[in-house]
Image 1 (cartoon, rainbow, N blue to C red):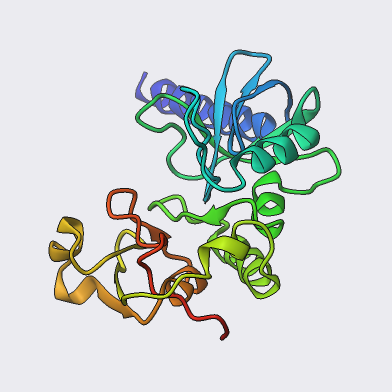
Image 2: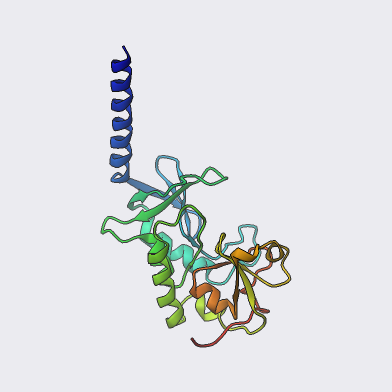
Amino acid sequence: MKFKKITFLIILILLQGLSLSLNSFAFHRVVFVYDGDTVLLKNGAKVRYLGINTPEINHQGGESEFMAHSAKNFNQKLVKGAPVRLEYDLVRRDRYKRVLAYVFLENGDMVNALLVRKGLAYVISIRPNLKYRDLLLECQRKAIKERVGIWSNLLRYKGEHHLGNRKSYCFHRPDCPFARRISKKNLIRFRSSYDAFWEGYSPCKRCKPSGKRSQVQNSK
């Protein structure tokens, strides 16, 4: 009886693994594009692109962030009505119940990376989902060098230095409450937002260190 139970568990695990493997090769149809990094699939799943963040669209009629509509339009051209393949990381859903995924086109191109390479998104690293961080950061550095998309605006201001958190990969203004909570072992100092973005750190949404007050080098 014990042997049968163990055999059943092994078969169950193998079937689950096979299901996950087959699912990673399945294609899904995109029926709606919310913005640059969020889409709706035909099966009803709302998908948030992993590893990146695009400028926010103000859906209340106010002013949207720089290049927000360009990011949405580019995303829409790539995926609207198209079959896409989802690849997951360790955590599959966020607190809003959205599916977290790297999204691939039929030709193998990763949409997340294309948006970053076009300068329509920046890298945002949230542990433990770091599978493609190096690839996305490589795309970001190329876009920064070329000053395309958001980088034509984000890197033009001069101001103060910034404080980064090695654990969260987030950077802050020195006077940000979250900056004061960074432990010494996780604290990293950046001379500018350029340096922070270059290393793959994303700006704090509270203090917004990449705005007009931020210190940004014009060259590297």
